Every structure is written in structure tokens, then in C-alpha cells.
Length: 296
Image (cartoon, rainbow, N blue to C red):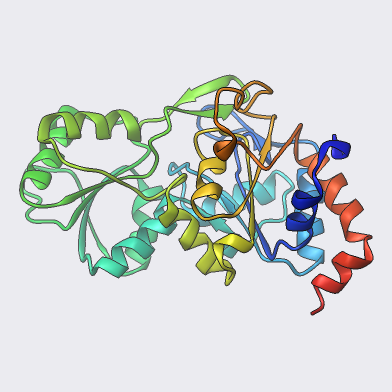
């Protein structure tokens, strides 16, 4: 497949100053709650290649059923060398967004995966309960325990002036058993239907998520390569920040996933998996031009 790669894409990949990797369907596959993770072909070697060349990277999942530190631990247990500071979730980017806005109290519809990063940043986490009091935001994520009283509390908070945030608005994520249903989109849709409020997304494909990852890496968004399997997430996020969009076909993004999209929304590079990406970057890293570009 590397024969079909244009010179322009080769040059951009050679000049990439950092990488954002999706998790489910790109580096690993697990069950519907991210258990039993197994690395996809080339995933371990791809991360080792990036690490050994001193290129910064993050693994960014839209999952919020675990904290970033817990996700990193699970990935390490599965054999992928991912330190805690290389793992991001929509809660990671939410911290950046909430801090910029000066938010102090946030109602969280989710578990510790959403709440812990906020608490660590000094933000008070408020459960969705009757007497919650005024909050700055309502933040929705992975919440299979969702109840009607929680819906009532969230709506009351929005009616009281809180802004609604969703970790992810994609309807599905990739698992070894096929498509798994996300919860944040469904819950946010109920709140919006009842209140008529707007919505901001903290995870992929928002530009806020890309900017938070770029800030973590110390690299401008346009100098990043974004690698993922979901046509609704990584590719559009990359385009929004003028980053290099690399799609892989090991998750939700099958060969025909992009055919209906205009050229401006197509991935710059569509590969079978990260094993093919590894083969390509290994080939490019042997080029004298690539050595010059990374030692200027």
C-alpha cells in the first residue's frame, strides 16, 4: 500500500513532530468495557519506534470508564509501553477547557474515569443529585448506571445556567465484538431535548481536544500526525487542526468508510493498520532527507 502514498504525504509524515494515536481499533481491541485488551499487529513496535526516535506522542481514547492513569496501566499490562503522561481521555482535555473558563464546580454524569482528573486539577466534582446547588458545567461521559433522577438533576443544572459538555458524541466505539454503544451521546441528547441547550465536546473530534493534546506534546497541531480508525473522530479532528490524518482499517473504518466523503474530508493516508504505518515510517526514516529534517 505504500506505493500509493503521494510524495506530499510522505514529506508530511517524514516531517511530523509528534503523533496522536487512537486506542480502541487502532492500537488494541477489547470487549465492550475495554477488558481483555490485545494489541493489534504492529502496535507495540509502532510505539517503540516513536519512543526510540524521541518523538512525543499521546494515546488519546474517547473512553471515560477509566482515568488516564488507569488506561495507561491496562495498556502496559497488555504489552504496550505507555507511560501515564502519554495517555489522554476527554477528561484530560476537559480539565484544560474548564480551567481556561475558570470553572470551579462541575456536575459529573459518570464515574471515576471522568471525576478523578477533574479533582486532581482542583475542580469540585458534584454528583447528579437533587440538592446539588449551582454548578458551572454538566459533564457527561461513560455512565451505564444513568437514571431518571440524574437526568432531572442535570436538566435543573442547565436551567440554572450550567454549560453542557459531552466527552464524546460518537454513537459507537470499536470492540472485539463489533460496535459498542457509547452512553454520552444518548444522555446528552436527552438533556438537550428537554432544555434546548447547546453542547460542547471535550473529546475527539473537537478542535479543543486536538489543541489540548498538542499542548501536552509541545507541538503545534499542524505538525502532528493523527492516527485512528473512526471516520467520525480522528480524521475530522486532524483536518480541523490541519494535522496529517491517517486512517487505519482495524476498527470502525473499513475500506469503504470514506468513499462518500468529499476530498477535503478524506484521510491523507488510509492504511490497513499500524503495522503498515510502521513499515512506511521505517522506510522513510532511512531517507537522508528525513534525517536532515529531524536534526535541524
